[in-house]
Image (cartoon, rainbow, N blue to C red; front, side):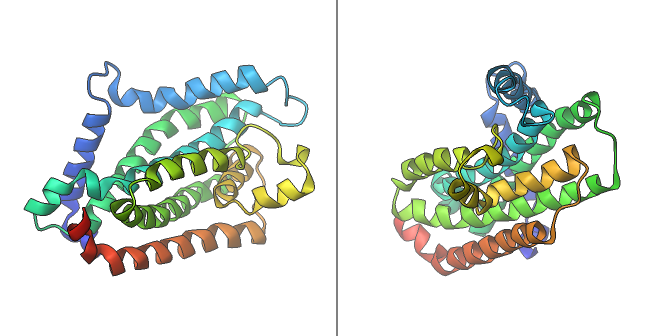
Length: 254
């Protein structure tokens, strides 16, 4: 919190630079953050909507809700992983805490997520979902998922400095994790052993929480509450501890 208050201007400037660089030479620019989830939803509905029509109620929203949380986690952890190496020159020239660069990438992912939500909420009501008080829990789910992704990102950012191949290994791991997150298929249709694995997947827990409160008007169970809080707090504390202990060695190996 101290870094955020003291270096908020720097974080905003770094975020603006990241967004401009991401959408450089693009005519639509930041609008792609709105269009991308919609296009993915359209494709997945055409491909899998008929297949799971009888087992997944409101498939487009089921998929889109899961995709938004997967995209948030993937963007945060992936972008934070390379931030120290990507900003090597700035780290050498400017006396700014390394944590500021981490937070700027996290903030960038949140900004992109907020733009994606501009398409999500109108679709909820377009598909007949009525507003309810449970939807007020949605920001809590977003916040906890952000802390989980940030905690993973802290660890990856240190590993990437010492072991660049972690980028490629993590890419393979993300692919596996995505298919174990039940983004586009019902958990009930896989074997019981696989169901246990999926229910232990932190990213799936955040997806499930959001689907219950946003799509199906169901209050999450105490077990699910425990899981999303446990993974967020545990991952963040572990990641920040690893980052603080090894950040002084970064400049020697970057």
